Amino acid sequence: MVNRAKDTAVTERIGIIGVGEIARAMVEGLCEGNEAPPEIFLSPRGADTAAELAARYPTARVCSGNQDVIDRAGLIVIAVRPDQRAEALPGLTVPADRVVVSVLAGVAIDEVRRTLGTEAPVVRAIPLPAVRSRTSVTVICPDHPAAAALFGTLGGALPLADEASFNVFSALTGTITSHYQYLATLTEWATGHGVPAETADQYLRSLFQDVGRSLGDGSRPLPRLVADHETPNGSNERIRTTWFDEKNAGALREALDGLLAHLAGSRAADVGPS
Ligand SMILES: NC(=O)C1=CN([C@@H]2O[C@H](COP(=O)(O)OP(=O)(O)OC[C@H]3O[C@@H](n4cnc5c(N)ncnc54)[C@H](OP(=O)(O)O)[C@@H]3O)[C@@H](O)[C@H]2O)C=CC1
Ligand SMILES: O=C(O)[C@@H]1CCC=N1
Image 1 (cartoon, rainbow, N blue to C red):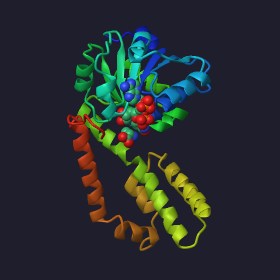
Image 2: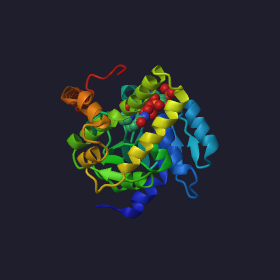
Image 3: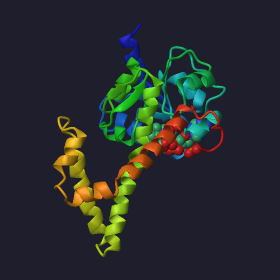
Image 4: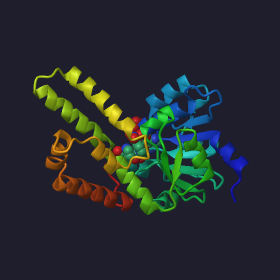
C-alpha cells in the first residue's frame, strides 16, 4: 500500500552512490535556488564533485562510505557507471524500508536487487543533464511514489510498467550526442567553405533552437513539421531525400536495434570497461 507521508519523508533524505556528472545535475536541480532542499548524502567518490557540492549546498554532505550513504538516506540513487557496479555494490546492506533508484543504463532491476541482496523496492530511472534546470522528464520503471516525487521536482516523471519499454526509451536517450555531433558537423562543413567558425556556430545554435521550440506545439505531428518546413522540390526536401534516405534511416534503426539488444541483455558480460 502507498504511504504518502512515508514517501515524502523518504525523498527528504536522498543518498547518492557515485557522484559524477548525472549526480551533479540531480543535486543542482534539487538544491539550486530551492528554499527547502532535501538532505543529500553523497558517497566519497567522486571526491572532487562531492566536495564541491557539499561546499556549495548546506544540506549536502559527504559520507564516510557507500554503506554510510545507505544508513543515512531514505532514497538511494545508484549513479556509478555500469562497469563500476561490480566494485561499488556487493557487500552493501540495504534495509527493506529504503527505496533504491538505479540510473545504471542497461542493468535490469532483478540484477540490482540480487547484487544488493535487498527486499527494498528498486526503481530504474533515466535522468538527463537537464534535470539540473528542472526541465527534463525522467522515465522511471516501475512507477513508485517516492521516485515519481523525486523526479517530479526535477521536471516530471514518466512512469513505465515494463522494463522492455523502459529499454526502448533508454536506447532513445543514446541518440543525444549524435544530435550535437550533427550540428558540429554542419559547423565544420560551413567553416570548410570559408565561413568563420564562430559565425557558423552562433547561426546554427539560433536556427536549431527555433527548430526545437517548434517541437513544443504537440498539436503538430512530426510528419506535419517536416512538410511545414519544406518547399516542394526545395533545399530541405533535397537534403532529406538525398542524405537522410532509406539507407541512412535503416542504418539508424540498425544502430538503435543493436543498442537495445545491448541494454536488454542486462550487460551480463559487462564486468570490465564497457
Ligand atoms: N550522464 C548522463 O547523461 C546519464 C547517465 N546515466 C547513468 O548514470 C550513471 C553515471 O553516469 P555519469 O554520471 O555520466 O558517470 P561519471 O563517470 O561522471 O560518474 C560516475 C561516478 O561514480 C563514481 N564511482 C566509481 N566507483 C565508485 C564506487 N565504488 N563507489 C562509489 N562511487 C563510485 C566515480 O567516482 P571516481 O571519479 O572516484 O571514479 C564517478 O564520480 C551511469 O550508470 C549512466 O549509465 C543515465 C542517464 C543519463
Ligand atoms: O550515454 C549514456 O550512456 C547515458 C545514458 C543515457 C544518456 N547518457
